[in-house]
Length: 86
Image (cartoon, rainbow, N blue to C red):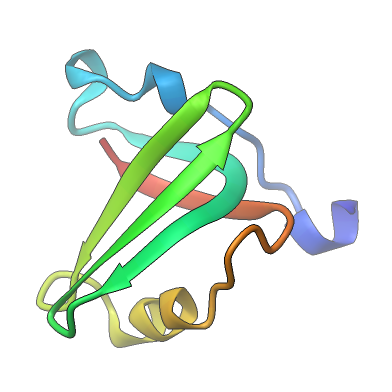
């Protein structure tokens, strides 16, 4: 597993994403629970042992390569990693 994740380390669990850490970069690791792609914006729900957190990716603010990677995600596809700003 180390080869797949390289040096990624979880900084927070899903239930720790709250207004107190707004604006911070965090890393959550879990499973893809739901994906909604509305063209100009994508919503990805990541599930871990503590709950769920929504990652919002507006195409005007997110690099196209990252948007393509998000589109390739599959539900509950094993371990997923997401670095996001809360």
